[in-house]
Length: 71
Image (cartoon, rainbow, N blue to C red; front, side):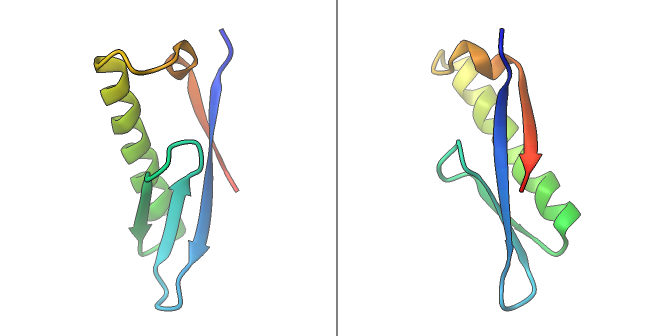
């Protein structure tokens, strides 16, 4: 079974906040006060979305083995 790699894209807003989104999961994005905080938040949200999809039978088998790559 191959692993699903979720790409996390980050950007810093004009007000200093960090924003991150998981490109493979539309709508999964979070804000944080630091790079580390926003990465933790967006990864946790992505895992919740994947868990919900698995629970409802909406996930592909590759979502059973996932990793994150921060860009």
